[in-house]
Amino acid sequence: MDISELKLIPLFSELKESDLEQIAKMTVRQVYKKDNMVLIEEEVGSTMFVILNGRVKISRISDEGREVILSILVDGDFFGEMSILDGQTRSANAVTLEDTELLIIRRENFLQILHSYPQVAINLLKELAHRLRRSDAQIKSLSLQNALGKVGSTLLRIADDSGIIKQGKVEISQLPPQQDLANMAGTSRETISRVIKSLGQLGYVKKEGSKLIILDYERFRQDFS
Image (tube, rainbow, N blue to C red):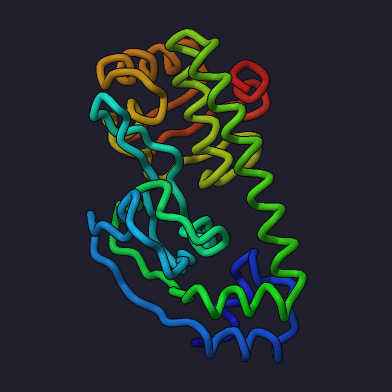
């Protein structure tokens, strides 16, 4: 693997080239087609994954059989690490939303990396803390807010994860399908459609096909965070 690609991954970005060369030897890259199930909830896990390019949906199935989307991961994000760290079964499903290239690291190799390169362990802890804070905010959003607030908070999470900011606006180049948005916001497809239309009428967003533009990011964050 080209170490210049590893350098772009936040987990490894602060390592020296000589360290990246050693890590590259412990990895395998593989392309998964769109809608490919990468991880299955409750299966035994022996590998973790880093997204080189593409998008992956992380979800669980509720007791009522409804899909609950926890997050949508993009380039540089990683998943499958929990089973690596605690030896337990997978905590969620992972499905590719488009053709996706993944870096695969086996459990014994990743544990070796953590022991050999403390900076990777620090970066891992920072990301896990960020995810915990985001989960707390998501729980608060789902439990306290009305439909407008739930959808707005969901769009804000997507914008923070994968949006491109320019001159105060944030562009989400490929908004997830309405059903996926509904599963993220804990609402229905009809509500998603209605609320996005309302957000447009209120001057918060502009929708162009599958692209969504948040017209004033600071205003949007203030009202929906």
